[in-house]
Image 1 (cartoon, one colour):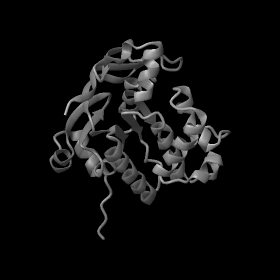
Image 2 (tube, rainbow, N blue to C red; image 1 turned 120 degrees about the vertical axis):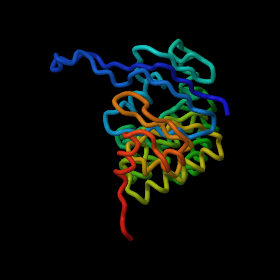
Image 3 (tube, rainbow, N blue to C red; image 1 turned 180 degrees about the horizontal axis):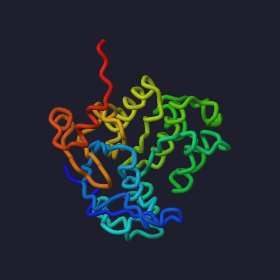
Image 4 (tube, one colour; image 1 turned 90 degrees about the vertical axis):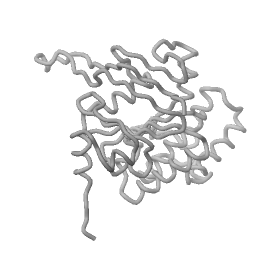
Length: 261
């Protein structure tokens, strides 16, 4: 496999805060290098505050890194402007943790899903409407759901809407930022199965961000462990779960609940 995403020495700093005089800047990502191979799921795991979300947002240019390089399919993402950046945003999408916060409560679901299609001028209106219906059905919803608004859905259904919105522009790469963490156990499994099926049918590449190693065992090809803004271990999923080499990975594995029944 070849790398779709190549990150080298990436640094993300947050601006000084008036109440943090003794800490003039916070380094959220501290010289991270990693590759995400085409068609794989690289799970990025770590405790809260380890820098996972900052890294995910930086590779998408949702926040600007302080230094380092990000290359997507050979293109320097940090150098993109205007039309080039718009084209990149079509190829690389994100699904956030809280679909209630990321979906506009005033918009109907069909309009939410179709918005990206319209922005990128991917289809005329009638064809876009048909595409919206296909997308809703692909994520386990129905055509009738297009006229409803987000608060009429459960948390799992809202996350399916968010996934349909991300898929609407036919991306190759998805950052899944704690995309199932807020869901109950049964719905979480259903959404993970949906993501695996979509990856198989569409050839998608995932950067799957999570704090819970139990979430990634079913879906990850490889696992990268972050601690205090750095990657401290990166290994194939079976290797990391069987014989972790870092204290951070062992601590995350130890935190997985074990039940006697």
